[in-house]
Image (cartoon, rainbow, N blue to C red):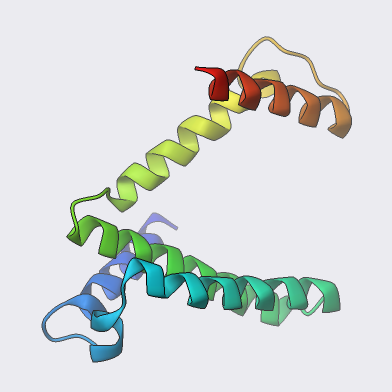
Length: 125
């Protein structure tokens, strides 16, 4: 899986590079917002229809949009894909205190209540 993800990042970097694709090279972060939202709508539609092959495809499209955004952000010196991955991993662990800490949750409702409590604590900091 790590190799597959790295290959996708490499593809995005190649498409943005000097020998890449003019369309991909021309994209900016604000322009990708429209593309991302269209893909999100297609994911929603696939879920509603329970069209699992299409869901897989549309999830890939969203993932590529995220990778492309991260590549552009890195080009601009904003952040890297590693930063995105590290941040989300930290956030997921930090907010799941019933799994990675001392809180207790045995129902989905208890889990979401603790998640929201942890999220609110972070916002106050």
